[in-house]
Length: 226
View 1 (cartoon, rainbow, N blue to C red):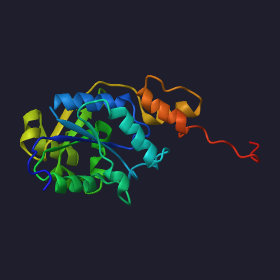
View 2 (view 1 turned 45 degrees about the vertical axis):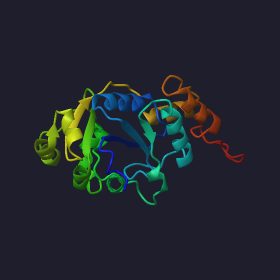
View 3 (view 1 turned 180 degrees about the horizontal axis):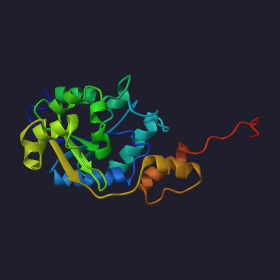
View 4 (view 1 turned 120 degrees about the vertical axis):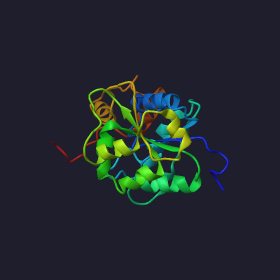
């Protein structure tokens, strides 16, 4: 059975990656080293439950993530969410991973903005039973001291990396990462207005976007005179 021999921790980095960029990659790289993770799994979401449908289709987003990560040791692409019908709920992905890797530590990577919305996630308390939650912290955000998240931080909070290795899950760990003011929505808007996303992402990703035209402004029909 998978997961019985290898007890090393894994990082789980999910997102629509529409498109993937250096903000994602730098955060994953820093946390991989800071948490001493032998692997960081990138999981492109199929149907994100908390936002609109991605502009690029699943096949293109998967191709972009693979192109962005292939040269970095320890970065792994996991496409399981793209093959699942319905919304890509994190708890379902973690249940799937836990069945496959019964004894490994799983570290779910989230941004502070996502962490603040965690009580709105589907079966969010079960997530904390299945995995550690690692919060990538940037200046300007503050973790709550009160409410349900504040209570969870009191019960589960840790500042010790070793805790993430010694248990399969259940801890909340907050770690500062380099602030890169890059976001996928701004990149899409830039491309639609004719801009060039060079130096915001790996060249291989930029080439896929250029080749596919996935973020180009839609061409007006022949009878559209607006």
